[in-house]
Structure formats: C-alpha cells, structure tokens
Length: 384
Image 1 (cartoon, rainbow, N blue to C red):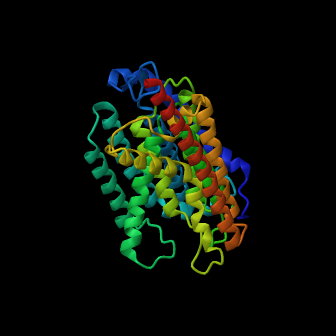
Image 2: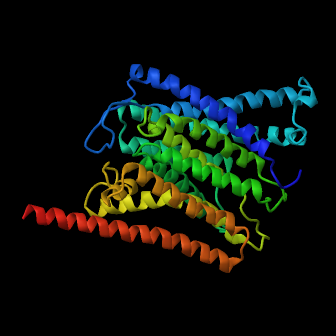
Image 3: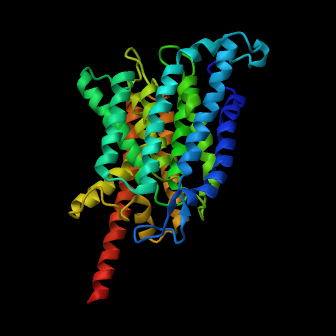
C-alpha cells in the first residue's frame, strides 16, 4: 500500500462516528433530565441555565458502535461470508492484520468504558476525588501492565517507563476533564489534537513497516468524528455537556493512542519525533499544570474546583467566552503543527520547534499573569 492515505479513507472512517454522535446526542438531550443528569448553574460555573449532561454517552457510543459493526464485517470477511469485492481493494490486504489487533482494540474500548461509567456516576452522584483517582490509576496501571502499553522514550528502566506511562494516562484524563469548563472547549481541543495526531500517523511512515499506522490513526479519526458530531450540540450556547463521562473517555483514548503509536525506532536518526505527543497535547497539559500550581500556591486543595483555568484567565483579560475558546483552539493548533514538522527536521530543528512552543506558552503565561495582577490591583484600589 502506498504511504499516502486517500481522502476517501478519512471520510469513510470519520462519517459513521460523526453521524452516530449527532443522532445519539439528540436522544441523550431528551433523556438526560429523566436520569438526573443535569448540570445546574453555580458560583464556579459559566453557564446560566440548567443543561443536560451525559454527552459522553453519545461520544462513547459513536466510537464503540462503528467498531462493533466493523468487527462483525471483519469476522464475516475472514470466514469468507462476505464477498471480497464488497471490501475496498486497499482494505483487503489488511483484514488479517486488523483481526490480530482485535484484542487490543477491545481492551482499549473496555477500559475506556469503565472510565466512561466512572465519569457518568460522578456526573450523577458526585464521587469523591479519592475514588475517581483510585479508579483512574487502577485502569491505567492495568492497561500498562497487562497490555504493555507504555512509552519508552528510549529509556531502559522498565519501572520508570511503567510509572511514566501510568502518570501520562491519568494526567491526560484529568487534563481534558479540567478543560471542560466552557462550551465547545474540551471537545474542540480534543478533536484538534486527535486530528493532528492522526495526520502525523497517516502521513508519516512507521519506522518499522514504512507504512502509515492505520490502526491507531484510524482509531483517532473515529474519535474525531464522534467529537465533531457532539460539538454540534455543545456549540455556544451549549444544549448538552459531555460531563466527566466524556472527558474521562476522551482523555484516556488519546493517552492510550499516544502510547500505542510508534513515533521513532531505536535505529532511527530522528528519535526526537517521540516529542510529537507533547507538541499536540501541550495546551491541555499547560492548563492542568497551571491550575494545580495556582491552587497550591494559594493554599487550596489541588482537587478543589474553581475558576482558575486557562479559559477563565483569558476571560479575565477581557476576552469573551467565544474569543477565549477560539484562542485556545489556535494555541492548540499552533503547538500541534510542530508535531508534523518534527519528522522533517533534524535535532537542531526539533529543538527550535520545542523552543517555539515553549515561547508561545510562556507568552500566554506572561499575559495572563499581568492581567490577573492588574485585576487584583484594581479590586484592591476599589476597596480603599
């Protein structure tokens, strides 16, 4: 198969999950109030009207259902019950390989389902942070241990890579959960990140096979479709929130996909390409890091919800909510495009790309800090 992935493949993979999410979200919007899944306005909330939760159910179904249908088709094709001409010519040579990846696929979806239901329970009843973190760490540790899904980054200490992999998964789960604080924000950033990661994996040959990474890249495209379909309902003013059920599932899927993908081989001369996930996911990780830092610095629990998120800080600078979301979209895309360039530059070029991303985030941090300080000074003068 040529290294170029045809556009029809992208459209064919994205469309089923997009349409499923679009339809399923309508049903969730209707039934969520009966299930008690409603997010009421509050001091730490930016919405002003009760809004249905449970959009994560629609995203989850839009990912699982197309794969379930595809799994049945693969089994029938392998058994000779589906005529070969029914399958696209480019797909026929990969039937055997896809069947070999079936256990990995359903392990991923099974673990993601556990986290989706964890988030759904939190949306409905409000679970303690210790319970949530315990389950998240348990699922992440099980995936890394049983499936050997781990980052290597050319480190030769198995215990260290095991620990870093578990922390990476849990960090992304909570990054997208924390980012879910404005209409279309978390899902939009996740769609951009998944799309950029898919572009990297489908346009750059894998070091070992010299072919596009169809399994992980295809999974990410299915996730993109589910997120875009959900965003129709989550656009301002949102009629449906994805809640913890959605953010846990999406963050987990992105975390596992970055561990399953091969960005560079041991014999590769471009080992710096392992930094691609950091480029793509720089903004969610920036939000997570800065929020935790602000809470700890102010003597509050790092698990106490507040309005110190990236988006809230941009609004404090004078941006509207829509402008804040668009700014974060553009920052995500700017940092993520560096991942596409990593494969086309040497180590010096890679260092320049990472410095550019660091400069972008540092510039934002300086503007945010100045804005918050000016607001604090103004409030203090007003109280005198």
